[in-house]
Length: 313
Image (cartoon, rainbow, N blue to C red):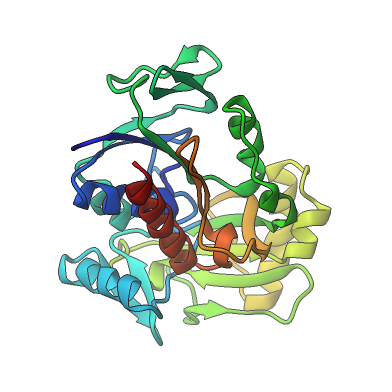
């Protein structure tokens, strides 16, 4: 019998849970506070500029995720960038739309809690119940969120997951640079030996990216990002731009510059289990924080959460 399942968080873990639950014949509603899908597998667009400002690529080691990446490639949604590193086409977020096919999407919706109404769950926001037809009748809930965002929601549902306390993340400041003219720099990516910058990608060198403009993504180290976590984006850009120019040997001034803070960017200490599941409440929690700091880990955790739900409803 078809059941309604609420999935809170439309990053790769939530999308994987939705995809597997839909394949088993259940109806899924995906909630996300952002307007887009994919979580940190994200693409930022600003006018003619386009940047992969979250996950820079994915790798595929296990058979399930390898098969999915091959599906993306066959559909023209992904391509190999270098040495087993795959990127979405035309941006990192592109495969997310395929994973969400068939699910009801409720975006721009910040979930604050859960309430059990009879046999079903209601998803709550600060303004009251989320406005979607299945609300109040969800047989199960999957929380596919960063670990620190889960406790207030499950507390409202009267449950706790003690394993969340041990999860640790590193933040990351990302600077996006746009250049209207070609750069005399043909490196596709750099990993500087630098205490401030961990990664530089010539975003425009990735397969399928728009031609004619140069875009660069600069990601700060975890320690530096942690020490400047509450700084303003303009101040971050002003510091990391000259550091980037030094590392790259360039002298060009960008035509576009902005910075984005990822507060929960990289899992430093995982829960070391595929997902969390409360059978009595029918609530699961999943994410890369369960298994490790890779997109594939988020996918595997989302599928594990779907398995727990499918076996429990």
